[in-house]
Image 1 (spheres, rainbow, N blue to C red):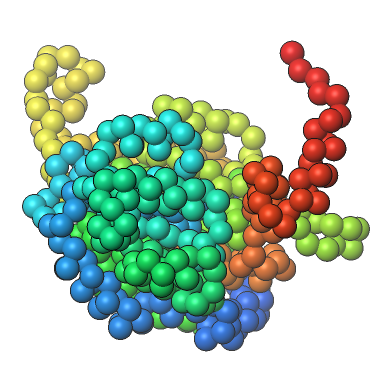
Image 2 (cartoon, one colour):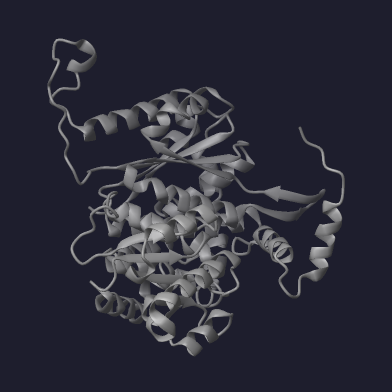
Length: 463
């Protein structure tokens, strides 16, 4: 069955001991809290948490597919201009569901995909030096239209297009994903006549992958977005289960909360055993960190809450991080992403059979070796009493990836209620944005600029 599953055996006290493992009875005791959290999340489904219903927006999905069909064969490259939630989901879907070498040899009629989620001048400058912008469709993604990074890139590439194609000719090379009515980009879209898609109300950036933010670029490069959405819809049904032990979102949220609040494990490691899954771990790092890393009022003043997300890739990071994970501080717990069946079967030749260090590899496959490496890490972690759970993908398909992403989104929503914080704001991010606006001289931020200037006049020390 093409259904992902969550195995939490190795996070339980019965497996790894009570010091680091959670008691199954304590998870059952959270049924009331979990049901209350679920009710609070569901009560906002049609209000400010409309990302919950993104899998069911059939009209929007068909609009995206019609646009992708019209664009087929017209551009060599699709370039996403976005950052954070406007980029990480796009990259995760592309790396999970397209060839790792898509940009070297895309399928017939499919463009390459570039995601420029940084304003590093060497990144943008090298792109301008290497890629002809007239071969590109630029997807500008910003709900507010005031994202400094995205808008600076938009201004740069818009000017490059105009210089080559003129005021009118450049317009077919730009598609904008932004708010339906508000923000800076919407009037620009109307004035210029750019094609556009809408970031729905009640859909924050890190929860937007199932909206046009993530679906548009995916459809343009040939990803099965309807399969993705079907997977998300199926997981939605599982996440609405009342009983905690039939609901993977409740189980995962409860384990995360207990690991930090009761077992003092402040680091949540996503260990992706599969090259296709590596960027899902990056996507989840933003989802978890930006949603749960907050300040809340406590009995003794402000309390800082939230786990630190870490991403690891198997088998690569067995040779860079596992030593720390097995013998280092017991401040971590692990989620292993595993693949049941890979798309390719790569046999290992039975050469050098007279050498014991190589003979055992002969006539086996890379899938077998990958599985053995993964199980070796799982065994090492478990024997060292390091709590770990596994999310099993029967295959990496649009359907299973859709399930995983929706599961993580719903789990994080429940976590917010368990931690007693708002999982859907990001005041820490806004503070950094405001400082950047002030440093760049944006109108309306003069007072903050003066404060920063005064701070910078303090003596500095360095070596």
